[in-house]
Length: 214
View 1 (spheres, rainbow, N blue to C red):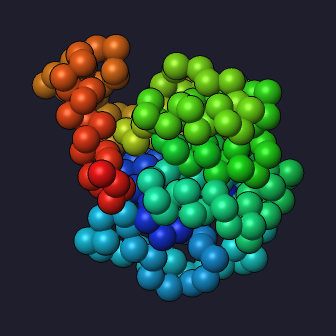
View 2 (view 1 turned 180 degrees about the horizontal axis):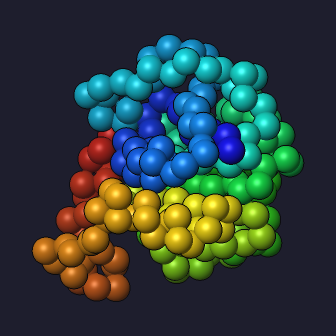
């Protein structure tokens, strides 16, 4: 089974690496990183890059593909017709089309979420709805052969869901144990409903700062 990860400038690292670790230890899976052009692609912080060996045209029809999110880089990717054309073509033959966080905006821009249930990062809900998606406040949303995950860390949940769907729940459970994914967060502040107004304000300020916005 071929699983392709779309890599583009400015993506959020955990959006990519979380699902990658799940698929990478799943038996019988060939993982590929693909980008518009082979070479180094910098993450959103610019602190490091990911070296990609394959161009989009080298992996035209993966069984599964994963679109990570980000901020400015994601908005640029969602306006890039070369990327959108690959997403549409890959979706036409894929067993599963998946996204993490604001990666769903790229699916939306490709016209794949019109009238469909989907999720994204809580701060990006209005943008997702602009593409005609029906926002659903779940950590992972299954809509036909499209799986969308909420913000950043939920990509791990989404990938485990995908493995269960395509390979089987016993394997997914074994993969979860193998990566010791046993979340026990120190704070119950993982969603706006739980975090409280002050924490939401601080989070929004941090997100705006990371996006270079005032």
